[in-house]
Length: 377
Image 1 (cartoon, rainbow, N blue to C red):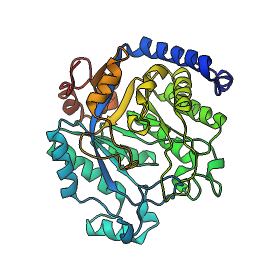
Image 2: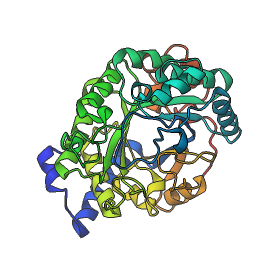
Image 3: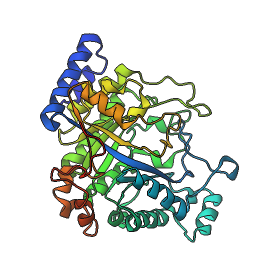
């Protein structure tokens, strides 16, 4: 693994040096993961689009009736679940704003209409609803939580996640990306990641690049994630996600990371992170996503044949056949995984609640990937 100083020396390489960096990262990926890249066939369940944070790049959040603020009803959740199951989906990714009822009376009213007083309790019961009425496995992205809250959700989640985004306190200042976002305080997000480790929760996290951070802050964010994993071993995957500017946001006029910036960041991440951590980049946020393979990724994340990316609705998911073509063209095969990775499933007694272990095992092949592959080489 790279040291911090070595990583900083590579932060601005271009041309042949960037190619060499990517080649080294790809060699590490090949050594650890072979010639297989994975993906998860999922549905996206935006349980609520209300939030108490006001990130400068977000169009997902709506906090007034006029904007379309809502909580999905149980029947709406089940409708998406049944349609996704018919298409072979195996993961139900719950995404939602953070603790909107602590700031917005409208959120309190909408929860009360559903007979709930907290988003956390409603999320728990909707995940249980999915487990009771389908073969999909919930993956929960509820944001910053304490240990007790995470423990409450573990019995209904095969995995959980929360993007660290960045450890920079500077980004909380006025006119920066995380201004007026109490849940984007780095210490709070790191506490959530640590608590997940203490509770043996298979966890996804990552960094968001291009939101005003420096390279030092970018690398320090990756190192903070890696440190947690070295102690607890619970980080299944790290996402490197590129900022995309959206009209109507405070950061609409900001420049986006280019392909070389993504390749450079991915390669450094692969060489900084422990080799057991999967490295992922969203394929819908870059038209030339096939180049990510040569930079060291081994996973594409969740891709849906049914639901849009509600966080980046303007960026359509690539078809699974396109992912497969990108892999095959570079000598790799594409295989479908479950929301919990094979290495964690091998030790299900540690990483899964006892109620979930048999359910997940019944969906897995002998290699820990999805038993039913929707695509074949």
